Image (cartoon, rainbow, N blue to C red; front, side, top):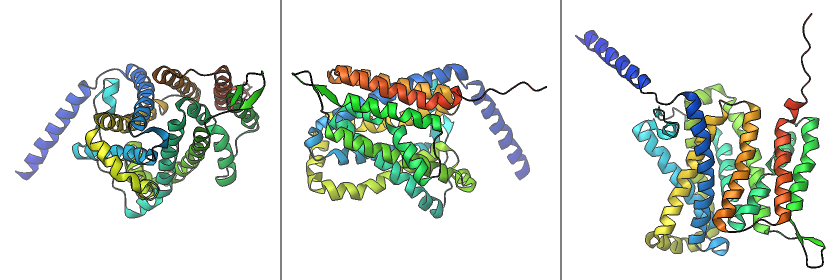
Length: 359
């Protein structure tokens, strides 16, 4: 009777799996297009909601920027816990496909300890980005486009991964673009450096953390045992955000603890803050997941073009949302920097020697 019951359970399980496969939804090509659309839309909306959340607590001088950044990761942690509770990841619904199963990762304490450097860098990159965008959402994006410059330095010095000679030649273009975007023409026609210091300083800090995050992620995933116990990049991203949230909590309390009662009072009474804080955290999580879905099935060239296009679209969207117009210098400087990033991403493929035909 027991073996018969097991056989029936297997038959039912196979039947349900077949039914789910039939309801798989849109073809992969359509789903990929939709993932691109919602990745871009999620990134743009994150920037909008993040700006609104910071505005709701009083802006960059409120002393609550770190609190907002930390609470956004708190939203990410809650979302991850809900996914594990229901054992489903709904992200593929954006591509009109069935949700994927997402079981709780089987990581050990040792695995979590190994994950701390990655989570620290990810949390640092996120918090610094919130500070940079809080300073100036548009100039912050321009500074963020210089990430390859910092990544090249960090990769060479700390991870023994130096960029190619051709890539190095592209770095001055990126630096020059950011520098030109920092200029402002005076009434007498002369140029002088004028920029939002918060956006520049924290944008470069964010770039540094992001560069280390890339190196630490490669190191962690090189351990096949750890990668297997995580059970996929979805679980790894979820754990990274949760550990990052726990890392930021004491830092938040140390630097902004005296403002915590003010924040909690605002959070209880201000529906604008509640909405934008929750949506910014949710959009941050979802657009990162959708980016993973798109980039892992596209080639390096498509991924580079997609990332470059995303940066441009976010800047245009935020200019429309904030009503702030880019200066001519910022337009030209950002165009130079972004084109430099695109060239940096593609140049090795463009200049790769062609294979000769075999005799």
